[in-house]
Length: 421
Image (cartoon, rainbow, N blue to C red; front, side):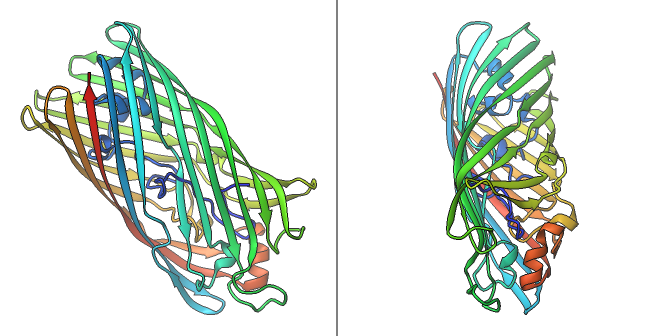
């Protein structure tokens, strides 16, 4: 069944690779695809081609990668997210509800001739994992959620003219996940504390595509645009829990739309040493609206009215070539929440975020470089008020409501190795 979602008792879906596990971008989206981009808060990504990882954000940037190049690395995401508030039984809190995790990546590019370039990329676009302590007083609205997605992309870049490039790629996405809500106490006859009210898990694989273009306006200025399609995941697995109409376990399916995204970026070389770059990102989170599970016995169950909205991300960064060996990077970004205050839940720490990033590269030779990046993300303290919608009614009727807030921050560190043959 799946994961990216919240159960009828308000379980929130979270996906990930997370950040292999902690989505640091809006919703359960992952921005972290390389340590190179991390150092500039992922500003200008669709218009930049530092190494083979450039194809992940814009396949057209393959045409800027000469010869054969390989890039690989890992980012480590360390979220510190707390939930606190008042349930029917009084004050309650859960600390560090989001799990830490490494996010690996690997990229390969190859120049076929003066016009055609190919690439292979392995990373993730979506993921997260949260878990609330069993003593938290509002687990009826969700106590655990996990999703991990891994994505392989094969891309082709074509240089139309010396100034214009285009590209496209085929995406294969595979994922697994689980979500659950448990009884916060034993006050309801026949349902023990910690017993599942609803729990689902499952796996699936699906296909999507990406497109990109780049325009080299002149020697010092470039614009890039990229688009990733929506990918529908039909998570097949099972469901169980006292909140379903059946007893025991039942095979079923829950369809989740991983939203389409678009990015518009610019790159400007101001001096031989100094460049600035920027990005505007859009994610179609409005596709994450209503979730319904379908079971093998022909029954169905509304999992949740999500009521998410499209979100935007704005980033500005700079690159400075200190000398032939050292390159410095920095950036700032503002990531808008995909959830209005009235629809936020305890199991998905979703709120506006501000990124502060710094990074550097060291060239050991013309062929071999190492990149490092560090980011601190400040999350806006946000309110939670459950039940939110009619589908939360059962959780409210059985165990009461919850009013509180989510707060926290995230640290991300990464390292990337790049080699040009």
